[in-house]
Image 1: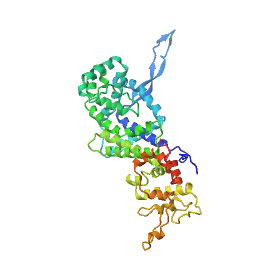
Image 2: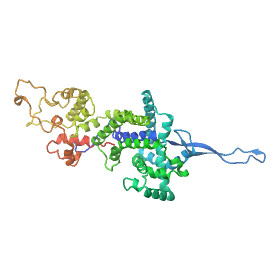
Image 3: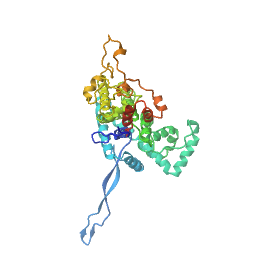
Image 4: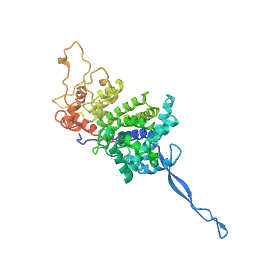
Length: 440
């Protein structure tokens, strides 16, 4: 039996990128409703030339140059200024995602689907609402760069900040720069914190492009609340150490539930409804991918604070939970169950080593004991119940879940199972192999 952690792949694909990709694109797809996109597009530039020379007419030279063109609406002078400032941020986003073309395609198709399906439910984003929403992040992120890049504006901001200190709850002194997918919320929160200061700063005509409208300010506040739902997953995936499946999957499941609640909240603006629903659609898409890989489900079951109860608590049907139970039992029988010794005969009630997932399903049916077959109620249990080995998957599954505080006290999930090796070495090895699988 191998003592090496994490030794799984699914159908030749590295399944583990799904959690991180799901989170990154969920973030990107929500932001896309509030960030007017500017795309590099080549346009012809005609160079000056003479009309005739030595009796020959010369055609002016034409050079293709790249310019920023708004893709979510008509181009304007304000668009050009914002696009120029945000070009560097978007290049950072490309590097952060690592598979920008794929992410952009998924974002665009899912965004369109969300708009279409919500329209069928009579949740419609008007042209005016769309324009206001798309202008929020370019103005917010653009002003930050403008202030940070200009010594004059920086000093002016500092003076206004000092003059309005009595209106500010805290000692924050500067606006937060935007780092795509990691500090969008911090950038937006800082803008809201300095609302009074920014309104005074953007009175100047040269900062008109960065001035939020009366309708954009409250929308920005609601957007910040929505992005806060993604705060914990963002922190998890930003850590130096790789997050594990038992940590990342439950967190993303909770995120999906939050986005679903937002999409159903009738009091919120339509654009918030649709943006949250797009996040839900994206989550569903990637959960379907994860369902195809058994490592995800087994890793959850082998987390002592979750086990099969986690699936029941998160809306999985009793039939699906029984299938997951059978899967775990089958993998145990195939790869981890220790061979029977002369001192301990294998109880006849347990699954045989070569029993398939379908054959072992009966042991995991709802309402039945997962380790012992039904015992006649007329016989004293002490005379017929087999001794349950400690180092057995069925014994583990039948035990109550362990409080998360106990797992944390042991030093975390992997250290918890390391400490269980002496008590149940085979179950511990299975848990360590599955639970150490990265969730990104």
